[in-house]
Image (tube, rainbow, N blue to C red; front, side, top):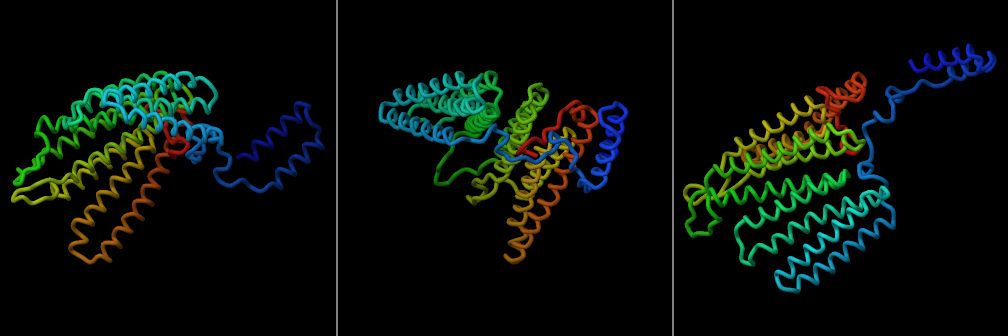
Length: 388
């Protein structure tokens, strides 16, 4: 009990001659008169799990920093508007020049004050996107319809994002790497679709689309999610203070990629037999796939004590159940009943997954207390500021 600890220290101070008995009596009386602390109030501040989201990205944004970002955005917009009026090679070189300048500014600012360190992360993020755009303009013709130039441009962005992340450990540099991986996955799947199924056709009598497109899309997004999950695992094993925040962000991105990518795949529509247009697979099958993905994410959340996986799992359940409601229940019953069911789905998901998130956090707290900050299986939990 905290009060017993205080009384024991008072006795120790008397025994050591630090205070006299009269002072000790007054201290004991004050401690006895103090109201009891609420449950959980004595937990160390480092163990409290709810913080403002903005705290994840460093100190608050000052007025000067805010206007600096706005001014930089206008300068970049003016430069891009100017180079857009030149020839296509000129446009490409102009965008690439902006990327180089931003990268140099990021390298120069990355070891300065916390706010300049954050600005370096923003510079690296925009530089990566500029590299993607500039590379695409350089290698693609104006009438290009193939996804191959996009794949090359995404590969350049991915290499640059890895380099920026190696140079800079900030959360925004990690976000840039995550976005580069997702973009590379998206354009790679589009390219594979062209190779396997042929380019998009606009015939008067189109051939039926193959349901195999759904499998290709779902598999591609799940592979991207696994890559992000492994990256989160690597980040969680880091030693610097911000490693848990980066791991949490990466795991959140992995879960969202798995859920939203699977949803994109199973909701894909196309021409069916008889020139009908609709879902390539039955909605119930796609919704079942979403439930399976959500179940796997929940298993990962408890196994790794990573609450970042709980949020995407909740999203997957809500999307799947809502689609079942829209595709089947709403057509068989009234609109009012379907709206009632949708409300119950959202309420149940909110309450249920909040309890699951708290349970994951409680397990992580138990491991921190017993293993000196290490979660189960040697993994630190990632319920960090803004993501817990």
